[in-house]
Length: 296
Image 1 (cartoon, rainbow, N blue to C red):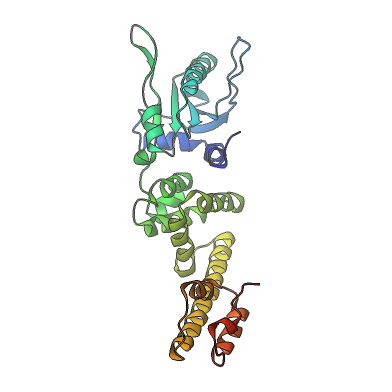
Image 2 (cartoon, helix red, strand yellow):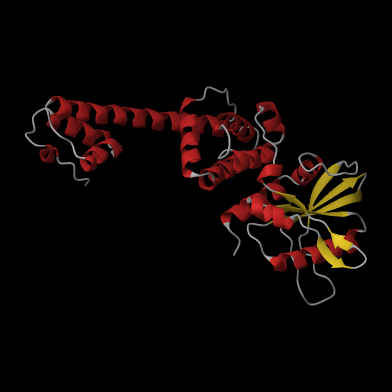
């Protein structure tokens, strides 16, 4: 069954077919023909044999209504030798169907998988082969300019996914939310939730912190709601941290030795009412145990 990561990456191409051309013509430096439009095409690539083939996505680039290039888009999360045989069938069948050049674009969130996918697929002598165009993290451009991000929102999402764990993420986050500000509400929410699940825990925390501090003038209702919620959450967290520090200060002033376990219970609590109750008790208790730190 396809994973969430697989489905979201494919949804980017379904929602913006021109993304295939942007990737081939930009970071991958493909020699693209001139085209007017990009169309999402049927991904069913069944030939006369009984075996059914279905690509992740098929994009057609057209000029004056004529197909000038077709792109088979595949998302590959792991090494699987069987898929390379399927890719051959996709390319051959689509070439026969449309009678135009065909490119095979393989999206690989993992760099090792991208290296494997980029190897030519040998058909037989003399030098008959299909060469996939593999897009791994190293091939994704770093998008930090908000204006460029608004023109290329899906590429900006891929940029954040590829680089936020490996470089200073703040310029990437600014570009990401500029991109989300430029797409419709449903797609913005989809990409935002995707980032929260795909990024590492440490980078996700930086993203959440960024949402409580940025002053970028976002225009869409979705973006304003997201950042208002982030700031409200940040204020609550800040107040909870202040209450926890006050409790520990009172206990230290009164000469109590607070264990690591009890200190963790105090600093990790985000319930303001409970923290205020502990602070009141800290002034008069005779033992730390009398605070009632058991989390109910």
